[in-house]
Image 1 (cartoon, rainbow over the protein chains, first blue to last red):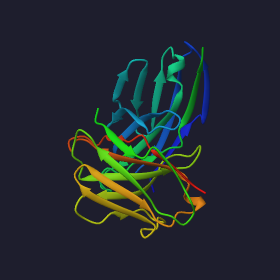
Image 2 (spheres, rainbow over the protein chains, first blue to last red):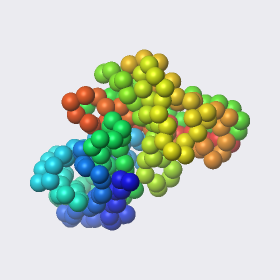
Image 3 (tube, each protein chain N blue to C red):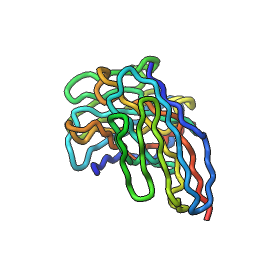
Image 4 (tube, chains in turn red, yellow):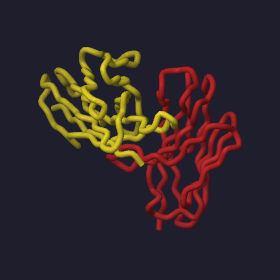
Amino acid sequence: EDQVTQSPEALRLQEGESSSLNCSYTVSGLRGLFWYRQDPGKGPEFLFTLYSAGEEKEKERLKATLTKKESFLHITAPKPEDSATYLCAVQARGGSNYKLTFGKGTLLTVNP
Amino acid sequence: GAVVSQHPSWVICKSGTSVKIECRSLDFQATTMFWYRQFPKQSLMLMATSNEGSKATYEQGVEKDKFLINHASLTLSTLTVTSAHPEDSSFYICSAPADRNTDTQYFGPGTRLTVL
């Protein structure tokens, strides 16, 4: 069974204080790993897809990296508007098309 | 990115009634759509896969007679919660892959269902 574990559950940062969120996964052949941002009462907003170990992707203050067992979402000099829940999800090779298994998320709060 | 809409945004109903939620892909066609449920401070749990022109596929533990799914066209899937009860109160979210060449799913804004 595919599993995704995110840590920490919650993270408080001061504006400008860089940090990283972790996503550990076990999957029977990784097809893709996805990062989403979710604001309260909203649907998840797509951030990144990573496919193979060593791959990195960046978007503004966010950078996602992937190894064979985990992914990191690095946040550089965060701003209050980066406050949200960040979700990690994996998609297994050979399973139902497009099925995603999500972690519980990391609630990020950035204080001004 | 691709846009997925849901209607309604929120709904309050009495116990025993049925509620229909629509999920539309606005700028792309989707032969497959997904329905998720999210309880407070929990992650998204896949309920079922909606397939255009064929029956939906339900995840283990999800009652197919209670959660009716109809994928009527390439841009519309509906989820009907039949004989809703308070324990069905949750945040329902749909998603769809916008491009067969990528596996990325785009999510709708969600529907908050409260059953009294």
